[in-house]
Amino acid sequence: MINDLFKEAKEYIHSCYRELNKTEQELDNRLNEISKQILNQGYYKHTAEELEYGAKVGWRNSNRCIGRLFWDHLNVIDKRNLNTEEEIIEALFEHIEYATNKGRIRPTITIFSQKTPNKTVRIWNHQLIRYAGYKTEQGVLGDPHSLSFTETCINLGWEPKFGKFDVLPLVIQINENHPKLVEIPERLLLEVPIRHHHYNWFKDLNLKWYAVPMIADMILEIGGITYTAAPFNGWYMGTEIGARNLADESRYNMLPQIGNLMGLDIKSNISLWKDRALLELNTAVLHSFKEDGVSIVDHHTAAQQFQKFEEKESESERSVTGDWTWLIPPLSPATTHIFHKPYNNEIKKPNYFYQTKPY
Image (tube, rainbow, N blue to C red; front, side):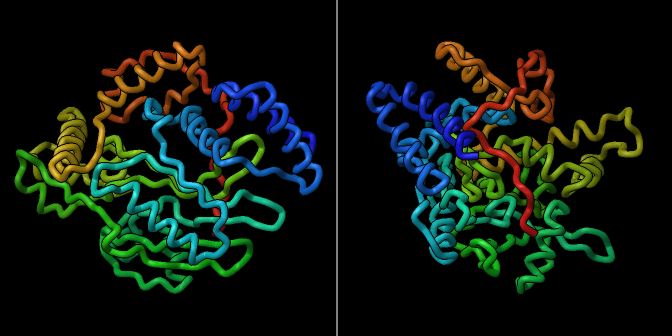
């Protein structure tokens, strides 16, 4: 176990120090320090520089992400020194405010304590901001993706509001302590009402979405060290909202209603009503975010940015790995170069990984 950890640490420190242009002496000294720490306590601690670079390279190695061109612009906030749920909650509020930046979204990660035999920090939320989902006699109200977590929050004492877009509370847990639940202050929430520049009835659908996708339930792994709480965000690609969150049958399922209002024949597949409704929903999302001054990227621009990322990686003599099924956009994928390319889905570390839900 100790040997495995030192092996992973050595591999990471070698690549990190090489890319940061450190000397051989600095590398040797650091590996000696790490070796002593592992022997004495069973783990080691990253320096601030190693942590920051690891988080950035983790993004660079994320096979499912089309937005990797900006990997070295990630703002890394080191909060490993925090020990209480209250301090962690305050840091999460700071993350939301800093990342949202009144709509000019900043790619950000906040990293809490590493997992050790004596300490584990968990954020129970899938994303820091996410809408509740409720089972009712008329079907699901709100976001079906959040059903089990909403139920968990209610069991922990949260008062449900039974709306379509209720922001869920944050749930934080340290070790086996009772999880702490807290509402996100209204002043921190930036949401975009969805409307269409051509169809005036669109605003009457009362759709909206939150500005920043802040993933909160993944592990960050750097050099054998695991960070179980490291929420991170970029900005939205329009199709994440317009072709998935609001469109999927298993989510808000808005296409039949939009198709009807557009006067399309929704009983016949040959009318391509789904495609036409999907296109206008995505147009509305992009229009609304742009009009409100909130950062967003369309899937064609995102694909061009990914091509630029591939070129830059090639110049740095690094091969690009990728999960094709995630990289192709869910709208008109064949119009992007990604659709026509094979990608090697090999997993490189540092990286971000799924972990088992704590509830």
